Length: 171
Image 1 (cartoon, rainbow, N blue to C red):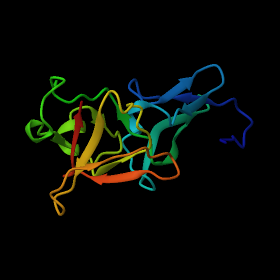
Image 2 (spheres, rainbow, N blue to C red):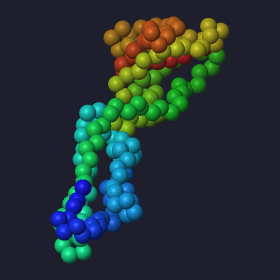
Image 3 (cartoon, one colour):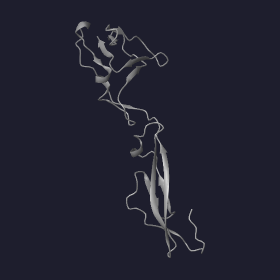
Image 4 (cartoon, helix red, strand yellow):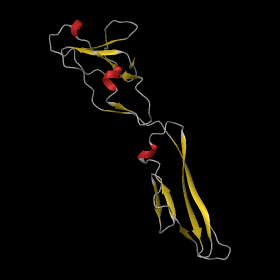
């Protein structure tokens, strides 16, 4: 909010030709706008702030003075993204002892992304849509070393697996 004691009209001058990501300038209204949803700011982890500043000048056609506008963007915990995941194919009559399965890390790390950064720490299984005729999902933790049936978890009774837990499907 600039003003001139002489009552001269003011104009915004020397606006940078390249503005920070997500910042636009409207010459008609002499206003800057920041879109905090711009992809460039999505990497900010929850609670981590960054400041975006644009330096420009204000002129009354006689004198020019420096001015700036700043915004503070604070990161939020964005939900992770995930592509489809698949185990290696298993023939129908393969004995369970011959089905190795794979770790949560190996199954999900190439398909999982979190724009806030960080790796995969584990998963929560909230459903099992396989019927007993199709086969059974099993897991094996590093401490137990025993394959156990996943059963039929639901969102209120999820099974949490660490990154080194093994998963497999036995037809």
